[in-house]
Length: 107
Image (cartoon, rainbow, N blue to C red; front, side, top):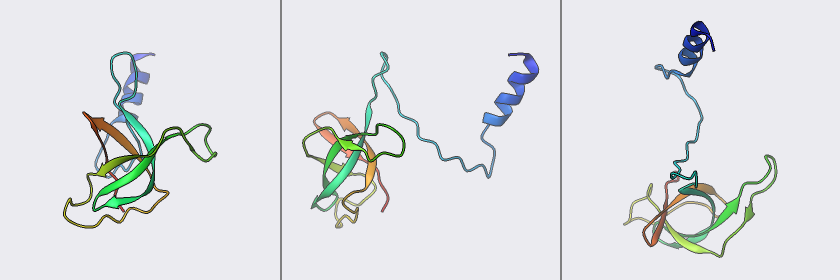
């Protein structure tokens, strides 16, 4: 790239006030393995705990396919003391933290 073109690209990528971009970033480990995974909510267990499955997003426009057995994950957006309201069939990105899974999804 020429110097002028680099400046133009950087200016386009700069985040100024009022810019509303819908982007998702997934952190990765050194060899490029994702540390977040897409999930589908199957139903609520209790409060902010849900049964979920990992899904393969596949081809755009196709329904994601479950790739794991159901497991429990906690929605960190909701209070630990209140009843959760995430609907079954909702999608989110989850992260494994030690022996537990967590995700952040607003209703």
